[in-house]
Length: 257
Ligand code: NAD
Image (cartoon, rainbow, N blue to C red; front, side, top):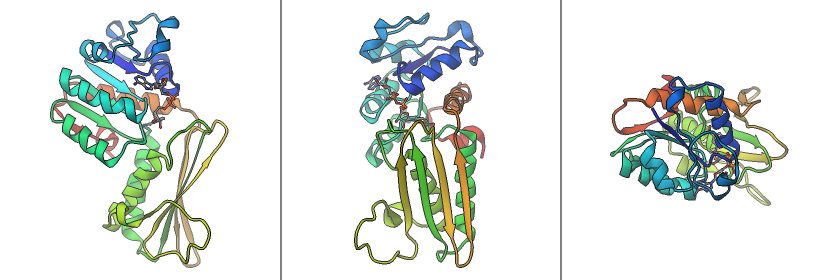
């Protein structure tokens, strides 16, 4: 299977290249790594590198995409056009983008996950379970910290945790999510799911879902200490996707959680 990497000079893209080089991929001889950004041509790669996204999607059997929303919006349609399997890790995508991903997945197989780690996907399942068990009198607050270069907030993972909590409670995050508090906010509404965000340093990603009760508090946390867990998760999703029929899959499908 020929694997293509978009944005292979980025933080995640270069980690994926490193993992592939260190032999993480079984079919080593067939690996194809491409970049669709300008400066890749100036770097030394012992793989094929292209700055043409269309060429990358045509040549590869599967593409792993950790770029940004504008790039991913184009990549999903190139994947559909060339029937290239796709693993999307990009965050900051809108609801409309997610609907387009589902449309593109009618033509090819796609795994889309805001977080590729085993721990976070298990955490989502645990948060859903806790939210289902604890009544709305337990106030749910999601707190996350990421490195100072992150461009979207709250993180895709925090939103995925919010959606899991909302699902557990049988409500929609659109109606219950609270993303800003400043000044005279008034008291907290019962059933709100609140988000808070910190940015700084080189933090790979920390998430805590708090359930505040009367006289007690439950905290479910995950701390990523190394970004390579996301790269390895993406490669695991790529292996899993091999031979799967067209459709949209989540990391929880991949990990069977
Ligand atoms: P980054 O800025 O280091 O890398 C992004 C790369 O994409 C850059 O090299 C950029 O030049 C490239 N790019 C931009 N537009 C492009 C285009 N049109 N075609 C090809 N390449 C293009 O960012 P990063 O830290 O590697 O994160 C990338 C994305 O992955 C972000 O959305 C981030 O939130 C997400 N992310 C997801 C997970 C996960 O587990 N799902 C984990 C970490 C990061």
